Structure formats: structure tokens, C-alpha cells
View: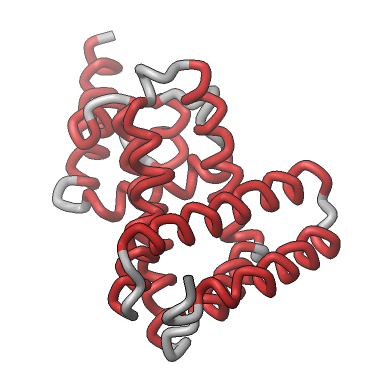
Length: 208
């Protein structure tokens, strides 16, 4: 029995050492796992077994399951902002082209998992608003900020930029939820293109 305990302790220590000073890599591995399996039934033991980390390591690095989920959400936001910046840099300041490019990117299965993850968190946050109080900031305000900043840099006043971004992101979320539920990509994408056509004049510099 003593040998078994000693062996288990050595294994645990080995896994802890494996991830020491590699927190970003651990977060990426955890993010990939969460995107594949979801968050509603997430527990640390299966997560640790899947990515080769002990529960002790996960707790040491993230504190708790809820904190891990929060950091995964922030990691996804960071990836989204990086992609948005790339699209904006190559768009010559045309917001509609950026919104079109982002939508097409989110149709790719690798990225569509992110929306499934966010919709799952929406449901949990509605059920337990106090527990997921941070989610409104992460999933709404944090997503709005880079687009608002880009519009304001192009001369759009603060209130109008906020209104346009609120409307655009609301359309994206609503249509994506429709598509996730029905699988009717063609119909929903056609509706999105129509929405972009209607929004285009509002995004023009100097428009009311």
C-alpha cells in the first residue's frame, strides 16, 4: 500500500512539474477540452486526465472550475479580438467587410464551437446570475470594445458607435443561434447578408 501511495504521489508531482511555468499552454489545452465537451457537466478530474494535469495543478493554476471557465472565456475573447484586428487592418476601414469576414470565419467548425460554448454559458448565466455575474462583461462588453474603438478611430461619435455595435452583435448572436438550432446555414447567411446591406449606410462616415 505504501508503495502504491508513493507511486501515485510521484505521478502527481510529475504532472505538476510538467505544467510548471507553462500556464498559457495549460490554458490552451483546457480551452480545447472545454470547447469539445462543454461546461454544464465540466469537472476537473476528467479534464485533468484528458490533458495530463493533476487536479492539484489545475487548482494551483486556476483556483476553481468557475475561474477556469472564466479564463477560457477570456482566452476565446482574446483570439476573437486578434482575428478582428487582422480583418480590420486589411479592410481599409470598411466595417461591413469586417463583419462579413468574421461571419464567414465563424462558419468554420473550429470557430463555431466558440459560439456553442458562449450560448451554453448564456443559459447558465440566466439560471445563476450571481455565479456568472462576470459573463455579461466578458461576452457583451468585452466583445463590443474593440469594434467601438475601431469605429471611433474612424470618426464615429461614441454613442453612435456603441449603438451600431450593439445592433450588429445582437444580429450576429440571434442569427447564429437560429443557425445552431436549425442547421440552415444558407438561409441564415442570406439573412445576414441582407442585414449587412441595410446596416451599410449607417456605418458610413458622417451618416446620422
